[in-house]
Length: 109
Ligand code: 2BA
Image 1 (tube, protein in one colour):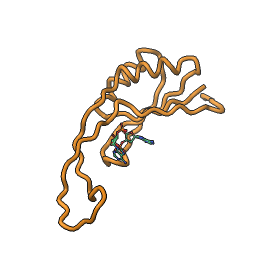
Image 2 (cartoon, rainbow, N blue to C red):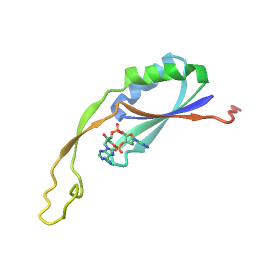
Image 3 (cartoon, rainbow, N blue to C red):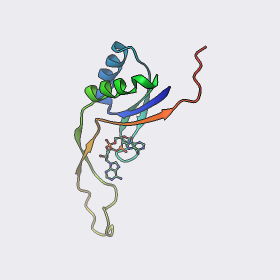
């Protein structure tokens, strides 16, 4: 068994929840915050048999989009803070950041 941990954008979380249930996967949704943008995102924990991991990847891939987001750095990227004027830069976020972790034991009481 594997635990798939997927960090996705909030905008895609309903679509992914519905698609996972439709395909017969069980998942837990956690509210999370990205370290860089410090904006809300959603983390899914999906416990799945090894032979179905690729199906989970397909569902995630079909449900989550890449988006460009504007972010204003709080400090200049290299250089001094003298006369620093915050300037928004565009970063590409998502579709999904996915980790696959082996599960040593699974019990469901
Ligand atoms: P954030 O940390 O808020 O990052 C949002 C986006 O900002 C990232 O999109 C990436 O495009 C950019 N970014 C992040 N760190 C950067 C940096 N040091 N310099 C320049 N740009 C940077 P994604 O890569 O799609 O990541 C989306 C979210 O997935 C992240 O939100 C974070 O919550 C999670 N994540 C990504 N990589 C991770 C990792 N190695 N471990 C844990 N969580 C991760």
